[in-house]
Amino acid sequence: MSIVHSRKQSSLLEHPAIYTDFYELTMAQGYFLAGRKDERACFDYFFRDLPFDGGYVVFAGLSDLIAVLDDFRFHEDELDYLSEQGFREEFLRYLRDFRLNIDVMAPREGEVVFPYSPILRVEGSIIETQLLETLILNILNFESLIATKASRMKYAAGERKVIDFGLRRAQGYGGIQASKAAIIGGADATSNTYSSFVHGTPASGTMAHSWIQSFEDELTSFRKYAEFYPDSCILLVDTYSTLESGVPNAITVAKEMEEKGHRLKGIRLDSGDLAYFARKARKQLDDAGLEYVKIAASNQLDERLIKSLISQHAPIDLFGVGTRLVTGYETPALDGVYKLAAINDEPKLKISENVEKTTLPGRKKVVRYRENNGRFHGDGIFLADNDDSTIIRHPFYPAKYTDITSFEAESLLHPVMKNGDLQVDLPSPSKSARYARERLEKLNPEHKRFENPHIYKVGLSEKLLHLRNRLTEKMK
Ligand SMILES: Nc1ncnc2c1ncn2[C@@H]1O[C@H](COP(=O)(O)OP(=O)(O)OP(=O)(O)O)[C@@H](O)[C@H]1O
Ligand SMILES: O=P(O)(O)OC[C@H]1O[C@H](OP(=O)(O)OP(=O)(O)O)[C@H](O)[C@@H]1O
Ligand SMILES: O=C(O)c1cccnc1
Image (tube, rainbow, N blue to C red; front, top):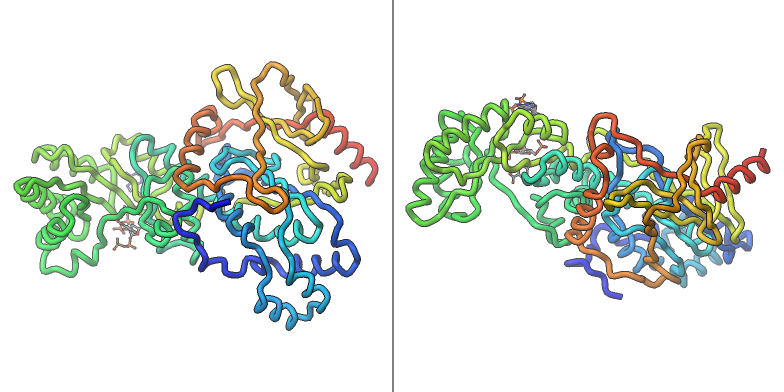
């Protein structure tokens, strides 16, 4: 099935099969040598902690993951490398013909997801499912983290635009995925040309201080830019003095543009008290009859500062966000994990001293319950087969429960791969962004607020709870 990417990104993951932790390969060889290669396994991808002290995560990275899985094989140079690392010839022969034959269930990219719910269910041979662990975690944890961050910034900005400026401050090439994830989460455009090229996301930008400094004077630099870009010009006004030179020069150029039938698109503030400067600049622009000229602001912004600027009534139309978006400030990683849930259809459990870290056994499905107004009420985790529980219970305080019979229900996990074949057209970032927006609208605001967001209910079916308790007792 075709992959709906604007251009397939090949340079980043030329070697997907060895884009992994070494122990995945040594375990895979171990299963092979132990004669277990045809045993079946089921793994779940899920996370426990919500990033940014927030109330939800926007699921992103699925399209990149599936694109990589679709072309997953060991190449000769990789096999030579593994041979040098001491892997055995018979295992390398097995890897030479290795093709994924897995089943993958997942929500749509852009879905709003919550702790403990299986997000990806991966089934296949023990070797193939094990080999994919690191790849899955690397792609989904990062893109979901950044999509979530972007969604918070957009939530704070409301109707105002949010543009990703982060590439220069990103964690190396991770900036390419970060910019894509930012679009999925709600950013309106990106300055990241590479990401725009490979992912088909909208590119945008203003100008740097160097352009202005390179001219004899600010006015000449503005005039030249306006001459070359009469329909998309946003002038950076803080190089010398925002209110005494930057904005007055921008006004002069805007008036000259009007005479030629063009309109200055905007100015950008990049330092100082952004609320104060935005108000003063707005007044100067309005007094000159330039109400249509937009004000952009940047400088270490994040969702809390955007919210603060808006509450200060700063007349800012567009927020440029870099560092704190693409680095996921200040949660360095989504803590998503990939845990074994069943071997050969036998449910498996990992017990932990910390009860919250005990895993959920068996093949599972996730159901979302909606209120009459269509908004999300909570999610239930069920065993995938023959589970007709009508009550879901709190995972750790089972006395708390919800009777789900009266709610409208929808399945969250859909088949994305069956026997290694893609089951869906992979969504473009803009399609996933639309879906994320729709779904976030259905999430009650108390889960979206930045301070002490309300905890979204995720319950376990009675049958799953009994299974967990039975296996826990058995293992004690
Ligand atoms: N009105 C405001 N309310 C809240 N935070 C603001 C406001 N104006 C600016 N900020 C934020 O305060 C932080 C520091 O701003 P500051 O005025 O110190 O700029 P700066 O980085 O020192 O400027 P420069 O680039 O000239 O060094 C930035 O993260 C900026 O986004
Ligand atoms: O502050 P961030 O959220 O990370 O946003 C990106 C920053 O990068 C640019 O500054 P830089 O000094 O690198 O270059 P410039 O000369 O274009 O301002 C831009 O002006 C922003 O201030
Ligand atoms: O286009 C811009 O204004 C821009 C791009 C990258 C970083 N800072 C600003």
